[in-house]
Image (cartoon, helix red, strand yellow):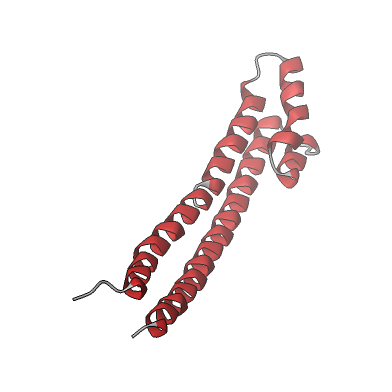
Length: 130
């Protein structure tokens, strides 16, 4: 039995492409969770500030540290600060959920498209030589 370059190429496609899919997916899966952690820390820093000046500085940093709509709930709100931060955290969690759903959709789309391309490449490699 001889080793065909087409079959070697097909086997490489079979094993390397799923590894590439997993590698690309691993970069995008944790992004919403990491984003939530940073935003939650910024919101908690507002409540944990030891002085009113430090609290105002933390509030002023919010537009850079969290989503614009989440920051606006704290900065432009009118109720007690703790209540505004609680509403902002709920808004942030909803936003992170939307981001996670969008990321999972993109990952599924990537897996489907790369699988189809790999199947076509495998067929082309096997059809090239008999």
